[in-house]
Amino acid sequence: MKPRSSSPIGVFDSGLGGLSVLQHIRQQLPHENLVYVADSQFAPYGEKGEAFVIERALFISRFLAELPVKALVVACNTATAAAVAELRKTFSMPIVGIEPGVKPAMSTTKTGVVGVLATSETVRSDKYARLVSPYGGQKVITQPCPGLVDEIEAMNLDGQKLRSLLTRYLAPMLDAQADTIVLGCTHYSFIAPLIQEIAGENVRLIDTGAPVAVELFRRLNKQNLLHLEKVQTPPQFYTSAVPARMEEIFAQFWGEKATIQPLPSQCPE
Ligand code: DGL
Image 1: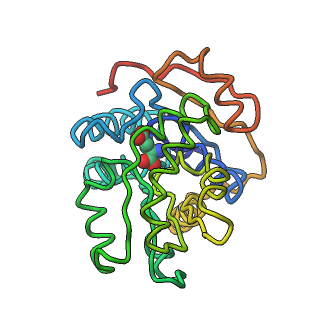
Image 2: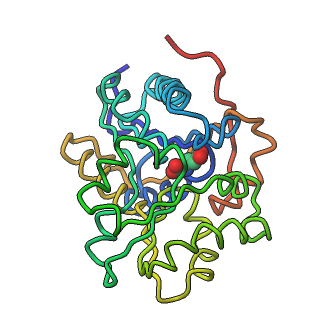
């Protein structure tokens, strides 16, 4: 079936992090139908290796393409770094990815030092190397952050373990006088208040959820795919974990009651 303007936009992440991007999409494109897939059974992606992330991204995108969705948002920096090129080769629909906001951070820093918090897989990727290379190693302090996503997925948004991990990860960039910190993983938006508390109020945090929604609007508009009917339906949510166990967590992160369906385990051909 060919997607139409009333077809939904597919959004996915390894888990709950992409809901922070979905919130921006909802705000900026309030009348679009949305489908969100949380690959919670396989989160976190950040320590699993590139081949695994590509395989999961292709699987989820095939499921979404079958619905069909009219556009795809990879609401995950790790999956974008590993798989967006492969997705663009495989699917013809508009695909919007997300990357750490190094460019806006570098253009606004006053000390000339920027810190980036991201997953190990994002930091290891060629895409990330290309993103930071114009600025030279001394100005961008990159910190891989294993463990953060596990705490966020478990809803420990202010626990002792999270605090001590963050204190350790932020220390090198704060010692180097970073005045701007890039949230290079969509999960980290949910712990922005804690990051701000530890980093101090003079440090600016950069989140790239809003620019993704702007880019999505631009792409849909260009292809005459915006949904112009002024109605709003709740997003459809899918998870690869057990849906009943995820409902409370989703409601907390999304801000309203969410009905969640199981992501089929067989890939559509
Ligand atoms: N939310 C993700 C990102 O933006 C994925 C984190 C993970 O699963 O490790 O990178």
